[in-house]
Length: 147
Image 1: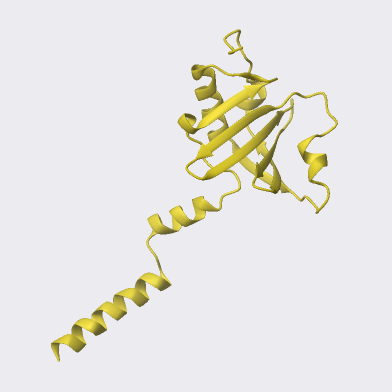
Image 2: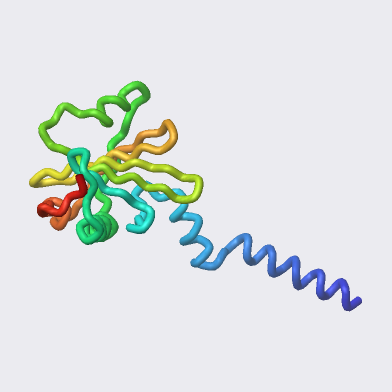
C-alpha cells in the first residue's frame, strides 16, 4: 500500500513538471534556440576590417551587442544566402566569431546611421535580423587594434 502511494506521488510530480516546467528550465531551453543570443566576451573575437579589437573595445562591443533590442527578422529564401553574407554596400562590418565547446557561429554586424543589421551564420545556415542600438551605431574604434 505504501509503495503505491509513493509511486502515485512520483508520477504526479513528473506529470506536473512536464505540464508546467519551472521558469529556469524554460529560460534555458529558449536561450538554446534564440536568434539573438547573449555573448560572453571570453568566447568571442571581434574583427573590423580584418583587424582584431583590443580587449577593452571587444568587451564594450560585446556589451552593446548583448544590450541591443531585437526588432525584426529578415526572411532569407533558399539561394539568397550569398546576397546577405556579401551585400553590395560601402559599410564595413564588424565580424564576431563565437566558439563555444562544439558550436561555432559568425555574426556580421552592419552598423548604419539609422539601423543595425546582423547576419548570423552557423554550420550551413544563415539568418538575418535587425537590431535597435544607439551604442552600436555610434561605436567607434580607437587606435588600439591588433595588427
